[in-house]
Image (cartoon, rainbow, N blue to C red; front, side):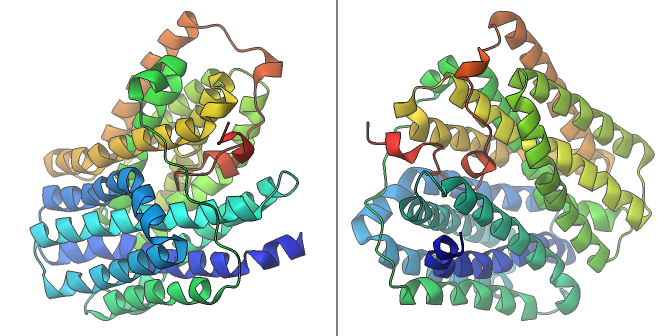
Amino acid sequence: MFKALASISALLASVALLLVGHGLQGTLLPLAAQQAAFSDLAIGLISSAYFVGMVAGCLAGPFVIRRAGHVRAFAALVSLMSAAVLLHPVYVDPVAWFVIRVISGFCLAGFYMIVESWLNEAADNRNRGMIMSFYIVVLYAAMMVGQISISFVGIESFVPFILASVMVSLAVIPVSLTTSTQPAPITIVRFRPVKLYQTSPAAFVGCFLVGLASSAVWTLAPIYGTQIGLTTTEAAYYAAAFIGGGVIGQWPFGRLSDRMDRRHVLLGLALATLAIAGAIALLEPRAPWMATVCVVGVGAVLQPAYSVAVAHAFDHAKASDYVETSSGLLLSYGIGSIIGPTGASIAMQTVGPSGLYLLVGAVQLLTIAFVLTRLFARATPAQDMKRDFGPEATSPVGAVISPEPGHAAD
């Protein structure tokens, strides 16, 4: 195990450095936008812009990587992302920030593709699950560290933007100095939403709805925190707690879905999310510890739904379609994520901070209704047709992780 991890240590170091900077941005930007007197709608649109860039990166990124090669594309994308961070305090304008966030989302999508294709190349069937799971842990841990680091630097000056840019820039060094062999050219697949829907309607629609709800909480949690009276530091921990809850819930709910119809798990997760979101919207807990406990609960039952939905799609997909399936479902998730922050910001501007969780609850009602219709439309797949759950193949962070990479070229 240690030998396998040592061979990818440079990649993991780059992931950690860049995601610390990215996590810092994720908390910093909505708070800085609020301080600059941007409207709730403007903050929502800026948050959505990041996912516009992510979707564009998923579609165009493979062509950039194939043209320039992994190392040169990596250096270019990370350098562009670092420069984009520094433009925020230079142009304090909602339109400018929208464009900058599109650029950042595009760069991060390419970053994920390069790192994950490299990790897939370094792994084999004996250690792929371990390597990818370790990667997911590093990714989420670094993002949480970045989110809470805002508590040490504040948002009153340009210093946190510089620190975020520095962390992103440092991510170039480990990969630039690595002696590891570059992976084979990245696989380019088509996005065929009709085929994806026909293969697994519950997975396709489920990923879209999870993206819609999850992106709203992830991007607007700092704003929600300050609006209910939390300090900047408390709001940073509140935002990080949502990611932490998702990490906690991934494995148990994924393993549960191996033992029963995954749609039943999706239904249960939607019901649990509806209950917690509804309670938050009605009771509006403002004590920092209570608010944080609640958002951990939301993260623990909302975020794993993506992984369960993707695993459900794999149960019905052909082995030769695994890469296309995972990439297509990520795009479905990304399209939903574009809508979520803007929709939530409108709700918060209309009814106050509770509008965030009212939107999350409304999305869960749609999820429940759709999954129920699918339970009557298609029988439960036979147990021997199901593929064991693995968060390394189903986490919404990149576009090239596949459960059985060896089948990608079939």
